[in-house]
Length: 478
View 1 (cartoon, helix red, strand yellow):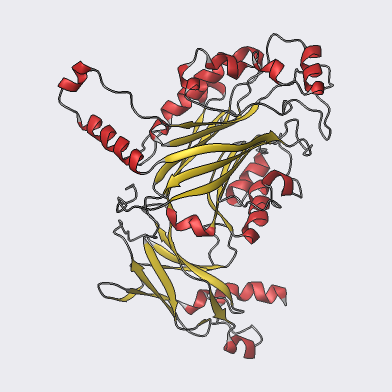
View 2: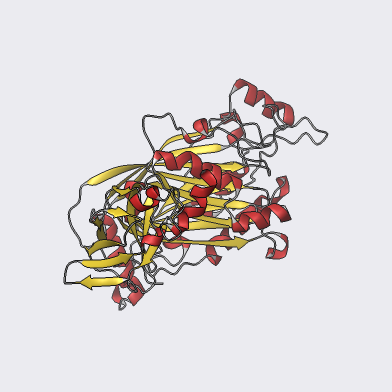
């Protein structure tokens, strides 16, 4: 797969974007009715991106088979919550109980490109997907970001194994992207999930006393991830906010009471969100400077120059848990970040618009104009979506860009859309150009009105050849 074309260099002002991240081991529970607190839906500062990582989503055989055909209940509930607020699901990946979802405001969608996902199993002998990592990588206004959602080995004595699993996942995962083929090549990486690190040495009474008194800092020195950071180089690359919230595991179901079963597991901060902003490569020593530069060294030098011209900074604004959710033995953890960056481009790759009036009474035309060079494909298509659509696959109808091209000149290309897929009852819609090469939407039209079909109205919505795709739905409605 070819990565996105090189952006023209221009002096674009720096901008700030709000990223809202969630990690939650949901212990096979169905989603709650209300996500308001978890997603800060009433906040005056709306996130630009939501990245949600779940663990232990129900993967019972019957449920897993149905989820592989349709969206699982968690994905559907989240889409139903966010799409009316003009968020689009850009990406999702599931490996057994691990689920990773990326949502964006519609306005940013044409600038989020080269979206790819992958997964790595670390369960029984490396073949079982109950443990491991799922990741999504993307280019956000030209900056390479990667999100890795993990569920690592459990139990107190396996701290070293958890670090080994992280190293294995980071090394094993690859992407079809020349600039960032591995996780480590990304400018900014987030590592989060049920990482399963525990509090060692301290006894149960002391741990619970610190939680009751909110003196969480007295526990930090014996928190395994903090301890492992002192000796494990891979962990030293990551930053994390202070653990100024109660340990998120393990609770009795439907309560705020820590484990009261016979096992009485010690509370722990198993659920975490960390990040790593790639720093510049260390300066070469004298001997290395005398050697001829390899192609790799030239790439690194070019990369450093680009990072200086297009800076990226990360600030964590909030790191906390939400005790109000009681459906699992874990509490969800959220991290809110501000990304400050200089965009590598502030224009989409394609502009497009509906030509003339649209209705199911006649075939329609789309006009699109490439604004920048990009690798077009015979598999590119233009989709018609209702305003407030949930995801890339939530189109009403679509047309192949190459197969249905009607006319073109040096600037504008005209593409045909069959009336058979246009909604009979009309709707407020947008058009989106999907690039198969970049695996993303690279252009979105202004909203426009698709008019109600006059012919179908006269026929009482039962005309067989008008809006065939929606006829069954309307018949059922009536």
